Image (cartoon, rainbow, N blue to C red; front, side):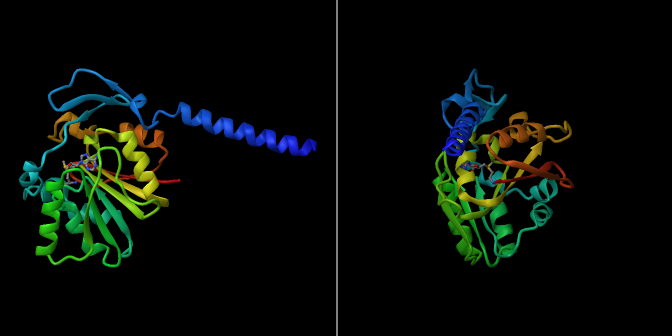
Length: 242
Ligand SMILES: C[S@@+](CC[C@H](N)C(=O)[O-])C[C@H]1O[C@@H](n2cnc3c(N)ncnc32)[C@H](O)[C@@H]1O
């Protein structure tokens, strides 16, 4: 009986500790995670863990996403090689835009697929038209919401976010939703312009430092694995769903 009480007491204690840990987490989805202030010219005036969130790049910017200089500035072929994905990986490209990365990634996962998630239907229309043009059968578009990817639980092996996370208006909710969609040990590959490097000619709110990214992703339950160096302007940061 005594042993039973001890065991059930322990269960209550662990449940209470888990609740406390969740309450103390800096990343509870909801308004509590954010501070609102005066918006800067590139920002929305909403601050998450000390970082002002940037405005969303509208679909008229597709031409900019497709610019030829990207090969020199971002070395996308090298970046995608550095992901080292198995051919059967199911990867969600979140904030897919025009699919600049998704279409380069698709041939690397011939037995898997790329699910391009975006909140702008115009981006997904472009993605679908380009996909038909290129005769690719393993790229599909999915309309997401500002606070969730809308993918089934445990349905993806990896999530890729290229120059997109810094403009998510609900990062805590998005990370919680990505966490659910990933299978256990599934990985996030985050490509963002290096905030530590003043030589990278990109506006401040469109860059992220390793320290800031770690602060946000770790608070939201991801484990930092590594930063893979070697890209001209970006970091490739790898996180894992424990
Ligand atoms: C700067 S573009 C980058 C597009 C693409 N990743 C690339 O590198 O070419 C950012 C994209 O993220 C999308 N986006 C912003 N918030 C989002 C959210 N919560 N969920 C999904 N996509 C989002 C925008 O609509 C936009 O298409």
